Length: 470
Length: 98
Image 1 (cartoon, rainbow over the protein chains, first blue to last red):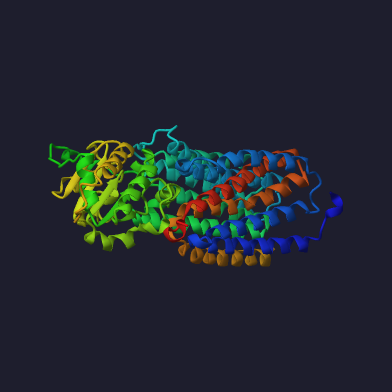
Image 2 (cartoon, rainbow over the protein chains, first blue to last red; image 1 turned 60 degrees about the vertical axis):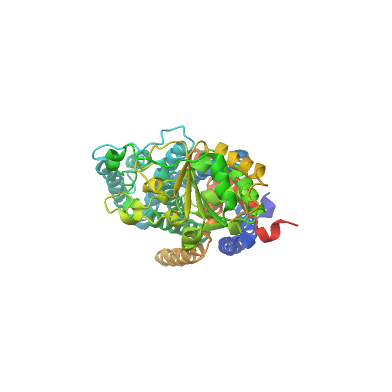
């Protein structure tokens, strides 16, 4: 092993190539046609960087490195093979692992260097440990909620934000003191422990519908903590990888918060999930029109254009494969079927796209909100499957609604609207949806998977009856 | 020290700008794979952890470092694996039917 040692400059040169490959990797990911090349670039960069590091002359013992690499691979393989519906919790879990790595390294570095830690070094080291620790527990909480081992409902109490912000302020104050007196090793556990608690409390008030924003934010924190680690270790490679990850998470959080009409400060302070159910009184016996699978199939089979709007309900019911059969049945009849995807549909950015792609629906049929909205007024049928708040017209018109101002999919402008829903119970935010009471709306009550399956069967069965079409 | 620090800050700033510009162009279709890929790339932190373990300066740093290497490696392996699995599923209607 020791004969293979190479000069430090050579290692830095490999890091440089790895950095270039990482940037190219993200660049190629921008479009489906080149995206897989992006993964390969990333993999090659990673292998080069790890390989070069293993040749570093400072390494005196490989035993524990080898064991840890093998254990990590053993944990990583099943995490890479999870079912597509489990991708949100897997992602949250991987943020937790990334943050764990960063906090552990930061902790070890501190105890190695204390008491001779330059001020700037101590400042970034504190930032690394604080961000890493809160991202670790925060992401574990998010994963737990997504996996439904923890209650998904937001838990709020009076003064919650004050408690949370005070905790964070204490951690920062301790960090500042440590910057001044880096020899105070007794205080160091505080900037691990307090952020660990803060991470839990930060996620407690978060409900399922806010998960896309929260996951993006945790992604950003994980990246920033890794960049801070890069400053501590004076590794440009790490600074760049961390900055790329941090900015990726940041861009996604901005997109998500815009799509929910929340200000970014609102998101940063974790003040989400606090939509008061003010619209409670509205649960009265308003009449809705309902339809059976047979009636729905007749209308859909006679349409020229159909836009399907999927939401988290489709993921819960695992209905994506039935939706694919539905897409096939209608396409075969010459109906133009598209999918309208709201940025925050599901539990993480892009969640619906992955599920529909898994079901083999071509990606050029999946349109985002800005692309599909101009088409909806010319659409014969908009079929909403398990989505609620993102279709609520109150967001456009009702100033008193908690979701007022949130950009929505204009399904109410389609000629006919169908909504597959298990019952009339209001959505996550506890807001009644005006859409359901429109004259052109047909409510299809039932489980999404079963109901779509019934429609498919009807479409297949009554093929003769609708030759005339429209 | 200070010039190193300034260089690092420049690097960070420029990388953040590159990140914004590149990520902004990623199609919303691919936001989930984007997140899993950046996660895998971010696990390059494993490099720092490997050195920590290998230099074996104290038992504490070796133990913490080994845990860190395992955690980051699981992200490298799992992250690339799932990103590739997801991207394989994205097919265009033009190329699909032979």
